[in-house]
Amino acid sequence: MEKEVFTVGTVDDGLRLDVFLTRRDRILSRSQAARLIDGGRVRVGGKASAKASYRVRAGEEVALERPPAESCSAIPEDIPLKVVFEDDALLVIDKPAGMVVHPAAGNASGTLVNAVLFHCSSLSGIGGVQRPGIVHRLDKGTSGLIVVAKTDEAHRGLAEQFKAHRVEKHYLALVLGQPAQEQGTIDAPVGRHSVERKKMSIHSRRGKQALTLWRVEALYGVASLLDVEIRTGRTHQIRVHLASLGHPIIGDAVYGNMKRIRGIEDPLLRARLSAMKRQALHARSLRFSHPLSHRDLYVTAALPDDMAGLCSLLKAYGEGQGEGR
Image 1 (cartoon, rainbow, N blue to C red):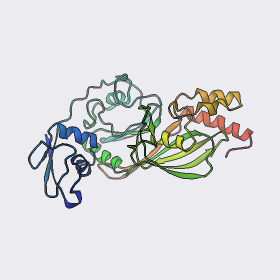
Image 2: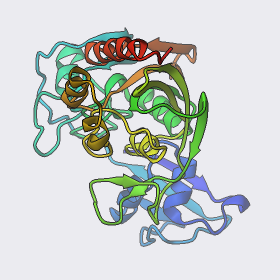
Image 3: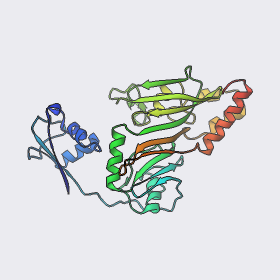
Image 4: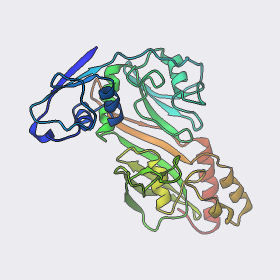
């Protein structure tokens, strides 16, 4: 059993107990901290009766006990992986669109975790029995780079960087329309939609701060290819932010706009755009510090065939219309 003891400083006086823990232990989320508190694994002044909402006081000692990692329940499966980088601490994978990251209800097999367990047999246990080694996630329909931790030490180091927003993340997004500017910034909170609970929105009353930077990579007339950098990592952040900009991602069944596609006159282009059944979003590059050696790591992944083929078609169409670049 791993135990840590923190002393509440004057700058932390009055913070909620769950917030205090996330500040002192950067890999903990508030929900994880709350579960540890509810489970009696957090003691304030020697007592385990405090609640997540308890306001800590300067000088108090807060003891955190970490339960041992549970054995992974996912089954290794011989599924091909495109490994971009690998050493004893971690690996970076170019995930194909359509692959779920970890087992969950309705997806017990065929996930990235199942494939990685077959590839390297041992992963960090911090993510839990269903998510061993998983430091961050990509949506099922999003392709591209994802980092997986092999050891607990690597997991902690990577998780701290992601939580502190020190990982540089760039995506390529194929969107409808052409932005009026060459680049821009979207600073709008993202939270659960008030009515449609499976959707996220920038108008949520409980939205969390979200920052997205974008610039035009190519213009195709009816569509554009954008380079997108996210400084935060909210659920569906890029998809929600670009849709709010008036340029939804092609193929996005949740935040897209099929009416605009149906309005395109060219039948071949209209059919190809309609045939994109996943959001045309690709995690193209990651830059972070290796959690053990601390050297700078920069990895990239080329655009997958479905997006590259659509870009080629859009480019030819745009040139035919005298547009694009």
